[in-house]
Image 1: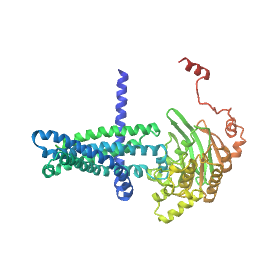
Image 2: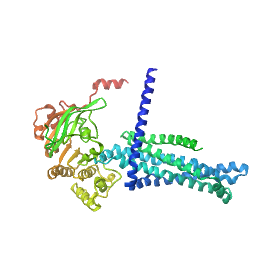
Image 3: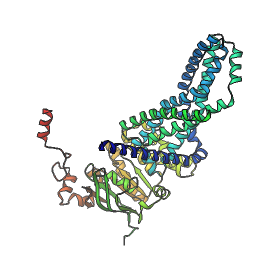
Image 4: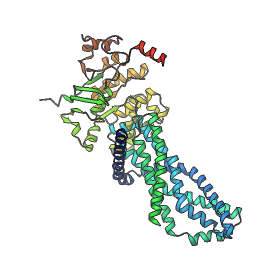
Length: 257
Length: 271
């Protein structure tokens, strides 16, 4: 009994220490971000390419099929009430407000987040970060901040592309496959979907961008510098990011309703 | 009073542990300006750790390290980075930035710390690469280099800012005999021609003898012996003799501490 209380105390203390260190790390990243954004934008552009452009294929393919499936489900349910024209609306709402930002963030964690963590972890394991320190170059500023900003910028763009391609998939299923009137399909979306709904999606993808990028660079920077350590850090990136995204999604949705 | 014009780096009463293992126990040594100083010792005695302490990548538990009379533990990050611009360090594994080409790796400190024109930077980088025989590899990526080539590129990068203090962590490992000869001569020539101070960590007793002015043999967390390579070679101490002549028997055990061999073998069989 005494032993388990001690274990709980030690684990709790460790969690609080890590959480505190994570917050300080976030403040350090924020402190260096304006300088990098304005003086070394070339580094940020390179990372937008690495995290964003290189994730385009997976985002577009997944977006297309998610939109197509949503249209299938919506059509089969709406047609029971002769409301097939609303197929597009159902798909658009689900994509823009929820699935676009959430699935993009989870796919981002799996593709770009893991790449960031393993890259930074391996840089640490092969003394590249120490070499930078010895060259009087701050590795947090030079390596971590551009990667963080690249992810933050790329996420809303990827989420927008995911939703756009998803709507295209929904159009193909609804209009081309089930012959829903093309005018009704798009007019219903235009009349029903409001700017607030789009803003909700934008806010979510921005918050998810910060969370996913921050977790990825944190895990890489704090990885145990061995092959096993980097592997574990990479796995943690995916797990923690997925949980964080769903928790934040709930909190933002609750706040905006 | 200590003479800071002659003594560049002073390590005083340095104590440092990793976990429960004490690496240094009140270690003292002085590195003189303008000399090539060798740090030698059996594996695991903390030579690389000492380099990391001297460059404040690690902080001592007790004691202090003075560079030109300044306790480096008291420096702010900005002051530390200013000091580090005077250092060049060759890491054991080269530590080249893998997303940059050979040319970009060597140019990296210049691009980060100077406002020199691209043309001048290109001249400096190609000169340094030529010195290590790798001007022709300027466009290659680190993954395309052999271990020895990567270390030579890292050496070019370490000296590209014309540092006051050059630190080499095992510079002779993995080099073929031709490259080894060139690098040994380069270490000595750079030190003398540029008036810099060099610190070399190496196990290679023969090569060190040709390049070092002064050697420190570190064992059991302390300086076991110091002096010129010739003085160490003729020293009476059993430990020094064992290390300098590579003898298996002596105070430094070849085997890591272990239970009785027979007992352990039989114990495993019975499991």
